[in-house]
Length: 333
Ligand code: AHR
Image 1 (cartoon, rainbow, N blue to C red):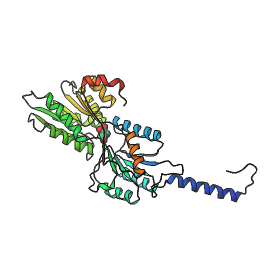
Image 2 (cartoon, rainbow, N blue to C red; image 1 turned 135 degrees about the vertical axis):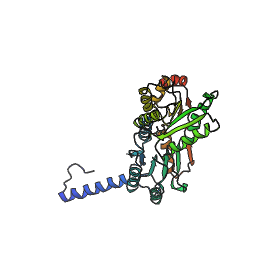
Image 3 (cartoon, rainbow, N blue to C red; image 1 turned 45 degrees about the horizontal axis):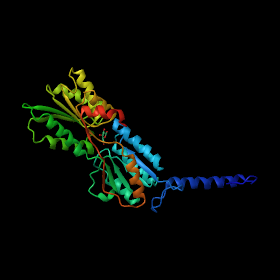
Image 4 (cartoon, helix red, strand yellow; image 1 turned 90 degrees about the vertical axis):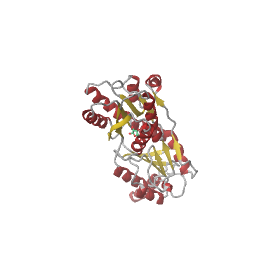
C-alpha cells in the first residue's frame, strides 16, 4: 500500500502494477502441486463441468452445486457442456491449464474419458465423478463417485409394475423412453427395469428409444410410439421431463394419461410430482439432484489428501400418487 504523500514515477507505477497483476494471476492459478490450499486467500478452487440444462433435475443439480460451493467458501469455476462430450473434455483441459485444486464433473456418457482423466492425474489434480459414472477400467483416474444407484431406480420402477400387473392375464405392452444414449442412467435404468420384469412373460417392452432426457425428445418419440403401436399399456420414461413431454403426445392422441396408459418415471422433480399428484403419472422412483453439500465435503477432503470412500450413494425413495400429494408442499426442487 502506498503511503499518503509518496511520490511515484510513471515507470515506478508500471512496475508496481505489473507486480500486482502477477500476484493476482498466481492467486487465480491456485497451488495444486503442493497439496496446500489453492489461491493466496486460502480458497479451494473447484472446476465443475456440468452435463447441460436438459431437465428439471439438471437445473436443480446445478443450483445445488452453486449454492453449496458458495456456502462452503469454495471458488467454483462452472462450465455447461450442453450435452456434448467434446465440450466436457475441453472444459476439463481448461481446468487443468488453470491449475484448479479439484475437478468434478458429471460425465454425459460413460465411455471415452481415459485420456483426459490421465492428463488430470499427471497434473496431480484430483477428480471427483458426480451423478454419472465412467466405464474406465483404471479406477485410479478418479478419487470417488457421488450419486445414485441407477440400476436400482430402474429395478424399483419395474418391481412396482410387476406388482400392479400381477393379475393381468393378457399381454401388457410397454414402451420405454430411454435417456441420453450411452449415458450411465440410460444404460443402468434400462438394465434394472428389464431385470425386474424378466420373470413375468406378460410384460413386454414393444418399443424402446432415446428421448435424450428432454421434454421435446419425450414428446417426439412418444408420438412415433403411438403411431407405430396400436396398443400401448405402459410408458416407462427414464426421467420426469420425457414423461411430461410424452403427456402432450398421449393427450393429443385422445388417450388419458395415467388411466389408458400407466406412466412410470424417474427423478421426482416438482413438475413430475405434480403430474403424479394429478393422476397423470402413476409412479416415480426418486433420483436426488441435491448433491452439492456432499460434493463440497468430498472436495475439501480430497484436497486435504484424506481418504474418501470409493462410492458415496444418495439416499432415495419412491412415490405413489398419494405419497406425491403428501410430499409436494415441502418439495424443495
Ligand atoms: O443423470 C441423472 C439424470 O440426468 C436425471 O435423471 C435426468 O433427469 C437428467 O437429465
